[in-house]
Image (cartoon, rainbow, N blue to C red; front, side, top):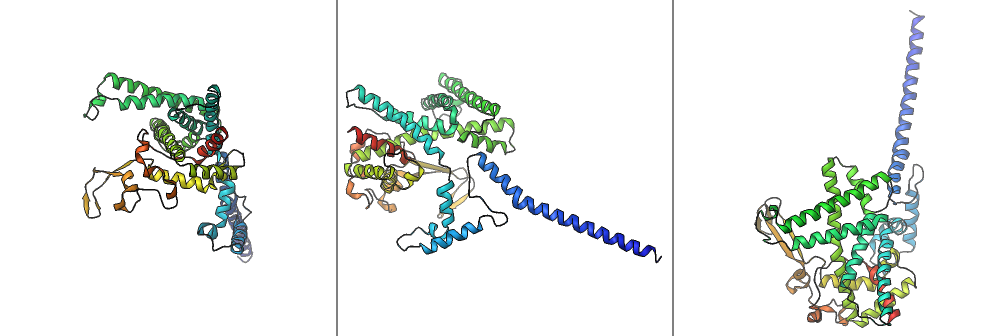
Length: 404
């Protein structure tokens, strides 16, 4: 027994040592995966989509850079600004300015160049002065912009889809007996036309998706984002196709006309107010210095931003917003039953004095006598307004000034 006992003890010690070593190795690999492998895997997924960020150091990550940024912000602090975000989180501001994805501005600029070249050609043909009706041109610009943003290098195919969607929208708006329950299922001429267009649109979109998957192209566009989102879901094949097609249709139908007419409104209001037109043009020249506008330049255009915001307030992107109650609820003491639709007229909310809004231009821009003071002047314009990209005006205005 005395000879066996030391051997048992030795074996137990070896087992404990082995377990300790296994535990240490397990802990090491677990920490290595959590601190190195997993973060790098996540960063790799973002890099493939064109999204980068500050390179982290081992173990400490970006802590050192954050502290340096905060100490510099404290030294350079000023009481002349209310930008508390830059004061509290200066590292976020720096990272946003350096690493934010700004490729869409380049796509928009290409669309604007196409538009301006067409106007230039028309003016030259007319001997230096031309009367241009820009409504359809701005819609074409908007469609081209969306095609480039959504389909990337395959935007030509996107423009074909865009034309079909416009035809579908017109067919839906001309439906006879609109509002009669069940009429949309009856194979009338209008319904058959709409069904055929809807089928064409679906097939064209899915064909682009199929070509994208076969080519294994790593495009940095909205379609790729939608595909990535669909791939990570647990939807069936049919549900995935519907998800992709519906997203594409929504972007086109909600974006192309609203963007175009919003830009037209801004141009009209500036044309009616030469003083603000001069201010915006001078600001663009000062910031861009004859260079093509980019995201950083547009963020610095304060005068441009003021004009855009005020024109959108006077003529909102969406005149009416409706919401359906998905359950019984109380709204300021009023019982709203499930299924009830509530409509909010944003045009009224933005200009009704009873809601504290202004019917005229804000005090900052009041001296310019913009649209709200003479609404009758603009009775010929449609009012389906949408979001406005400042780079549209930033490119158009310097060009116009060089012509006139």
